[in-house]
Length: 157
Image (cartoon, rainbow, N blue to C red; front, side, top):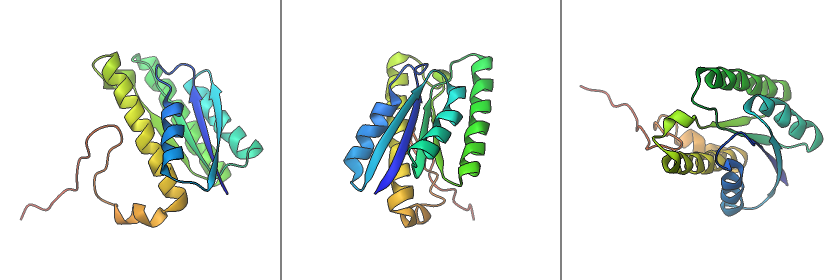
């Protein structure tokens, strides 16, 4: 039985973890989900580490929504570095799912983007744990989470 950790924040304007959990539950079986919610994005690395240490999860999804201000983007960068460090320290993957408030024109578009990105990252996490060869077959396809895929680059001869 695999264990999947989902860490999210109260700062986010969309419950991204709910979307991820719902998607995981629809993807298959053979796992249990452990959720930890923290106040802000810079708290996510510790939340993930706690999930690895106390719940013995095999992988974490880290969900966050930085604000529009430059300070928020700096905080997101710091949180991202902390998540990378935590993943290396634990030798386990952390799938980072951040949605910046200025990626969308309004609240409706932001909510749609956040849910879609959370769902797509949840499917990536599931695939990493249960079907890793599928990822290899999709290498170089220009896949994007939350937006339309970019597609592969083609030679121009």
